[in-house]
Image (cartoon, rainbow, N blue to C red; front, side, top):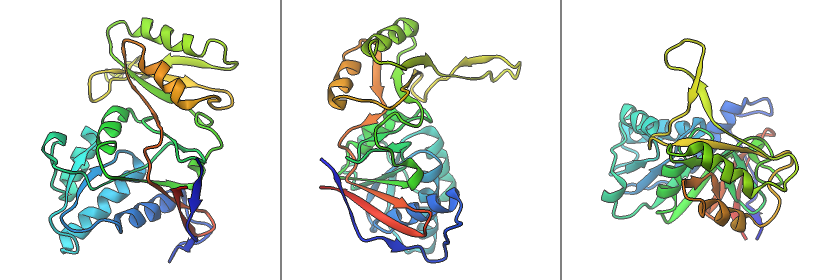
Length: 260
């Protein structure tokens, strides 16, 4: 399965010198233009999704949108949405999620994604998989020939036995040249210059998988192999979930990619 692109549209005030942050904002605003009053939205996490939250807040404050509520995919998004005045619902209280808007770390030619390098992959996948439409917003640097080309592919694991689970993840790829995996660490909150394991909003850890030349092979079979490991909660490959991808390009155009 490939993707089809709509005719590109020129960015209004943008130029070929637009910054990456400008491009993220343009893609986010284009996605928010799909939102109608009285919709329930899946609210994504990350720097690109943050622009969508800001735009939604502006439209709600001016009355251009009414009756919109969001289901946040992280505690960070929940705090941001509250700050800009977006009403929120718990996933269990949302009768229907009409549209989810989120960024992605990578997008392949079939619109498969890598998401969750910020650690929110489980809630993102739960909420964005529950809705009718999932619109992904990126700048063109996120387009890749294969998943896993530009950085870590995250896997959320339970803390108990995490080092053992890490070993099982490594075994899935033990014949793949250039593969490596590690538990994600961050600077200690104690400020002592030490590192500690990164903890997700769900109290879990993250295994980061790295590939020298991206993931080759059947992505769904690889997904199944990972999810069969006891101790793995979820992974950051979002396969077949995106209904469209909005791409802001450096040449000042916006393209909308959709599944063929």
